[in-house]
Length: 257
Length: 252
Image (cartoon, rainbow over all chains, first blue to last red; front, side, top):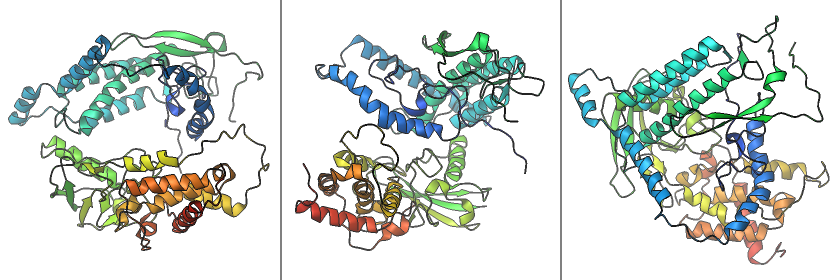
């Protein structure tokens, strides 16, 4: 039987404080969605445990600190500039996804439809990440991945076909909205992998390995969690370093041999 | 493998639904039922035949309880102890006609096609399916002795994923297997026992209020449950309910 390692998980997640609150006050991220408990590697079922720990033992004791102040907050009106802006942004995004109906019809009439379903693009994106930003990655493959993701995203906006309208239950539209986020996330994963010039945990840069093909960490330069701050769609993220400080354990290399 | 699919199409809760027939071919026997529907949808989209068939799904490994289809007259199809996502096409014969319907029960209104609104289950849980007492830190192992059979029964009851197959299978659209499992899982263990009487009262009242029927001991629910939840949980629910009515176990 041939056995080979495969990616089944992406380390990291939303930044949260000790109370599991994100940078948006009142928005908590629990379980796999946050970055807090697992580091550069993760063993099977620990995401499930993290969900249970966060849900049973952390949030019931931390969320109330936030809720305690909320008792005096009245009903929030939707007649605000922020609400209007957010609504407008969402609507324009959806319209853009559903847009170019006419060009789509022309394609079909020609019998040379270039339009593809959301799943088609999703699978392509997965394939790119699998091939070039997978278990083993290097500068070359990551550069290629970045380029391919950007090209695919352009093609997605050009050629995606979403049946139905915005004013009905439309799983294809929902998938398209998610996929749009995945493009962004994929680019961030590539950038982060490119930035971390060492091999550690699930991140294996082929440039950084020992003679026995074991991971080669660079604790001098990379003993930190890279927290990337979002600056809006299409804007490059900036990195904040959260140093890793171990008080009770000795840092060592793991060797499966 | 080739199949003829008869799928329930319904635009929304108010629209009139109907069956639509779609032939599908070249399906691998190792394909799961939901993957087969994915392939159908890809085909419906790419060839601009119809709006893709809407169906619920999430984990696709039988633990989330999202997927649930009535397949050839059986919830989760013709296989025992599995959810729709873990039903494989090798369980069918080449050339089969397959009838696919949503759960049919008044408390589960159709949202679109094969998707139903199962928030009624959430409302039952919200009515009392939790422990509100603070149980403090984690106690040392074996500090609170729990009989093995109680732990096993609680574990078995806890494996209910809330998919709603029991309601769909029941001629009365009764949710008693679901509520029985939730009540049992909590009441069998010391932390949950404190509020057991109150809990069963609240959950049963909510269940009745939402329009679920009563149990008439047919046990179709047990036969169709993908997690093989036992009907003894319904008996326990009834015992707890009667006990709660007469104030037994009520510690406030």
